[in-house]
Length: 190
Image (tube, rainbow, N blue to C red; front, top):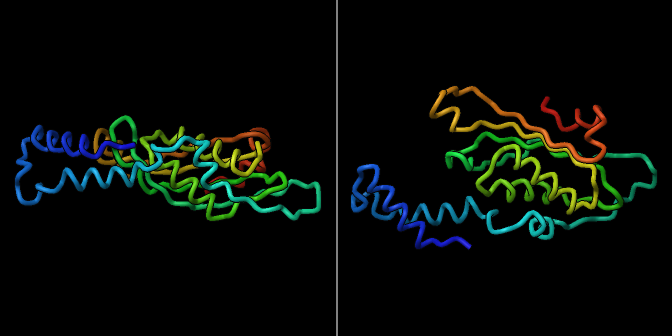
């Protein structure tokens, strides 16, 4: 659980450390606002991958009567996160997810909710893909999951190299998605 009082205290100290006056009109309530914001945007920190899978694991019978593999694919799920290295915003992030149901399918909104909650942590994009894949695997009861993420990182675009057009693309492939090119192509960006 986040300690909002400690966050407020430290944000006030940060404001002072950068040479600003925390009593200035525009900054008086900033420590409390930042604490509320962090509680919201880092909500996923309070949960393990297993807990997120339980929260959003509502499934339905897969009425497929064949033995054929069929994949569920959801593309262009938007999320944002914060890089754990610089606490910098990772933005314009698009997540593509695919999985092969094994008797049960997830509600479609649950896929987007899983992506959103996993992103609400201090993250690395690579770990975010792995977290989403693990959660989908557990929630849907399948070992066959593919996740691709494309995003911009303000630690690359707003500081350091300042390359505003740089995008990072990561892929996480589990089960059948590891070896089958046609399955990897399902989650690729068009």
